[in-house]
Image (cartoon, rainbow, N blue to C red; front, side):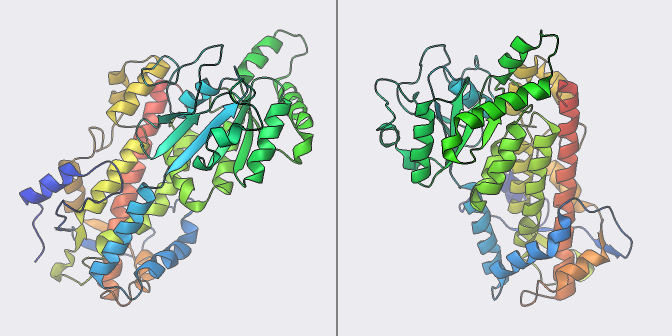
Length: 436
């Protein structure tokens, strides 16, 4: 018999869950009754972008839970979510002294140079040895500020060995002027080690400001000229990838293109943690995150329902409450709706944090808590019959086809609804912050 929604242990379990996809082993996760489900043939809503490949996503899940009992399937999916949460990403930022490496480190972490946890910046070389700066909210994401290449203690010949090159997933080679011989030597050495590397032409806003007073100034022509000049200096590397960036306004110029390139070239298990770590300072960043969370909805829905796919009289189905809480808390933090993220945004845009908080209007405006989730769970849910039909063939061997499909589709609906509500809250916050 499944537990009641009002079970005190369930409240305590939900309160203790961490803001990640880990389901702690020492916290009891029982079953929570889902609301009655109505099946309709009507089109419920327009599918989100990316949902057209639902069947391929489901096939991937099916490979995980095939020939598994409900309990085993639930555990396997929890392990997959846990593994995803624990993927480490190490980003190396290097280049010549004074190129703006430390400022870029801070920008990637969503910090200003004068924030308490910011990397130290100066016109002279501040970094004497590889220094790791953790992401403000994701400890498994580490940004490394490496000493400037070409300094007395770090010459090009021995540089990679001294900075322990195998620590990093990819290198950003930064220069605020033309790329020099040492930059090229470093890139060749990194390529020889079969590591990813990208050239970042920094302080592009300074160049634009300096040229903008000219009568014939054209920004696009100027940026093209700088980009072509960089590639010309790097011609010995074949077709180098060069990105023009301003650390004080990341979302402008080539930063989105850099992120798109990393999405294409990083190993699959690193892509999500990269996108998850990005500060949400634009609608583009928000949509990137939303796309990845949509993919996780199916995995979470199957994991939450795999423990209870056997039909229950009255279609009052059951789910693993812990997976629901973990999903929503992770989205909430990743979208920048938590207290710490709003405080950082407040400092960035010089607006009171209370003003930013007031922009949130959804049921999650005060956070992810039991009252909000129980309110979602107890209300009747309408699930499209088409969704049930698509899901049915993927629950063979785990339980009743119809009941299993309804259970998974119900949880899918809840997760998708919560994701969309939080995304709308984030859009409102960005609008008030005047950066979207």
